[in-house]
Image 1 (cartoon, rainbow, N blue to C red):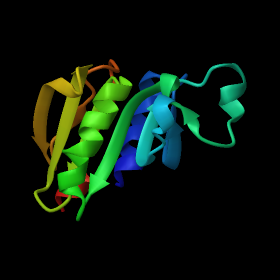
Image 2 (image 1 turned 90 degrees about the vertical axis):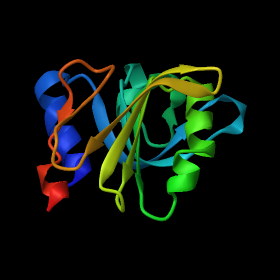
Image 3 (image 1 turned 180 degrees about the horizontal axis):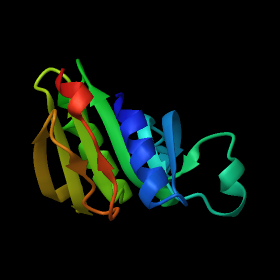
Amino acid sequence: MHMTQALLESVRRTMPELKVTDEVTIRFGGGFQPTVDIVIWAPEGDAAALDGPVPGALVKLVVEVSDATIGDDLGDKLAAYARAGVPEYWVVDVKARVIFRHSEPADGHYRGRKAVSFGEPVASFTLTGVIADTAALAR
């Protein structure tokens, strides 16, 4: 099962008010507009029918799937997401077969960090009940 599908199924079961979107741009202040692999966000009002960048204030969790970009994903992007106040940030390291979860953004870094190997369930730090099954990634 693909990471997007695993998160989508978990969010639908536990927090159906949230949306899981892949390959989308997020609009933060200061001109920071990354295109991310997966984002979980809370649509409000007209944002539910959004056709354009997801407003950064609505973002709950960002996932970057990293093959050749691990240095940037765990470096500059991590710092930028922390500065933007993204509550939770995951980096899926395809080569190492590990998912790095980050939470508690403060001063351009994340205070919370935990690595989870492919094959283990990955639970969100901040979204109660959101757990991605990564068994298919371990194959």
